[in-house]
Length: 173
Image 1 (cartoon, one colour):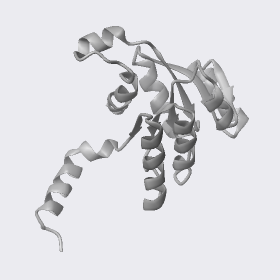
Image 2 (cartoon, helix red, strand yellow):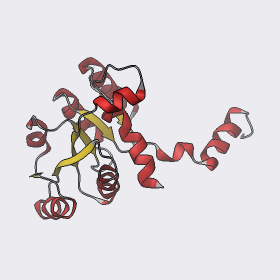
Image 3 (cartoon, helix red, strand yellow):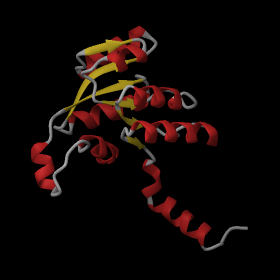
């Protein structure tokens, strides 16, 4: 299911900062991470559902520039904190990781700010809309040694795999 795929994609953030070599040992040492969702639109619902299904994740905070939207989303999904400015959310020391669910073309701005704040990042696709902006996001994340996961859930679908294979084999003009 779609939620299961998101849970799998949250895993890099869930297991960050753990030194144990064995996965079961790592999971036993795991603390619950406080996640925040920036952007309370349609895709945010998938992230909230995934967190509810993953005991290591806690939806701690939400943020949206439309106060009514943020308030409603927080109430429906049990978030403790509500923000209307993502900079204020990123200043909250209780936030461990941020799901970037804002409109395309603004992902990079939020990801860079989150990385500069030392937060782990789960970014919806696309990471950004130009190669230059993508390179800047990657540069900042690497410079800050923060964790980032960009969601590309369709890349594992059978049709996507078949098209990729056909392209690699030169079957298209």
